[in-house]
Length: 254
Image 1 (cartoon, rainbow, N blue to C red):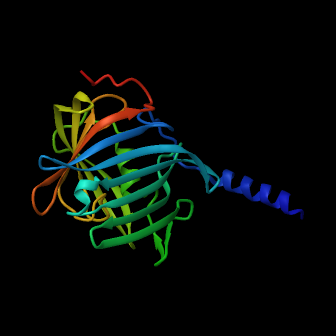
Image 2: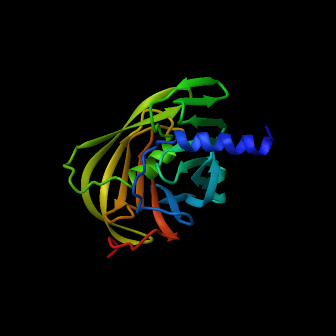
Image 3: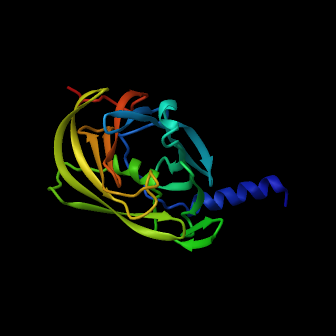
């Protein structure tokens, strides 16, 4: 059989087997870019960005290519230099990941990790081997974007949504606890927010794991307005400074 027709046949089989969920997403789209100041106490120690820089074809599916970067500012580098980068590829219809990469450079600590999620066969493949995963398992970055699409309007304080996060060679529970509503002001403006607490067991967006609180805009976009992470000494706050390429109207901004 001609190789070209064989490839077409294989692609047709893949599409026929794709009975993945289809979820509505009013929260983000290709081209969204968010910028944050990362503050340690009263000092701006770094800059962070979250960007959906395009739609890529992966495993015969369309996926959002999401990049998250954290860099300390030059004046803070001599104290504790950070150059972190995370990437995920999120299925545009089902909002689950196909691939994840983590590259951490924090002081003298470094770590590189990547995983391919074979969501059709329920396997995660890393340099360490192949592991079983539940349907629609997340990485920490895709879980963050998925949490933006959830409906919190009928939740009560301390209600939780259970997700699953794969990291290294294990699947961890990732509960998202609803804490209520609050109005806060950051550089980008004053926002009415939903407050949630992701209960991250492993593989967070910083090397030092700790309590995390996230303020999301109280509208369809659920834009991350502020993230507070408690560390060994004090806390690190990431506050929204700029945004562009939003999927809709930011109605929560006062």
